[in-house]
Amino acid sequence: MQGLISRILVIDDDAELCELLNDYLRPEGFDVEAVYNAERGVERALSGVHALVVLDVMLPGISGFEVLRRIRDRSRIPVLMLTARGDDVDRIVGLEMGADDYLSKPFNPRELIARIRAIKRRTGLEGDSLRTGPKRIAVGDVELDTGTRTVSRSGEVIEMTAVEFNLLEELLLNAGQMVSRADLSRKVLGHGLSPYDRSIDVHVSSLRKKLGRETGGIERIKTVRGMGYLYVLLSGKMEREKS
Image 1: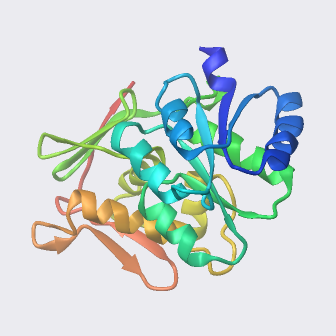
Image 2: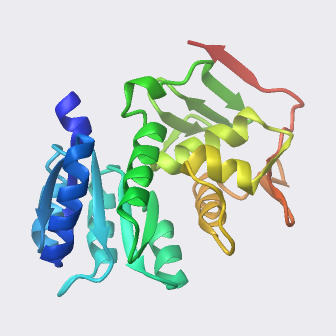
């Protein structure tokens, strides 16, 4: 298992950048495989031998978005996308398609390492990251199991990315209470909220689409303008089963 945890796939046609990433990541204990071709990148991402994919948006032939779509069709492996600096559209599109996080080029390699470790923590890939507390959380028609990392609505299993799962967990644990965007960014994404950062908003939008915007005729996840989000607690209570 330890081998899988340390394996990272980099899909980027910039060979020099891939070499640089290899030089920085290997001393940190990561085993890096670089692929410069989109088709081959999809194949390797679906091989089941990597813990995480670092994917560039700007790939020749097939775009990084198409690569992400093909990966998400068959796998929930965490994906960190590399985007052009200041290109908010690329970031939002990537998140909406299921990317777990993004980083703008050019970037500080230390920040990339920090983002990778944050993704590993929130996806349960590091042994010291295992959460204590409730194993099953049920709020209304939604049930979340932290042991199997599954989510169901009225008994129907809903596919979630790692970020969506952790975001929903935070909202359910605080059902009936507002959680600030800053707290959600820190707990779910593993980093602070920067100005104009819409990552959390995009992930909340995705949750609404997957779970349904309303429950019992009331908006399921309410926006507290300028502050954060609140998961509605219709019954006035929620159920928890501890592991």
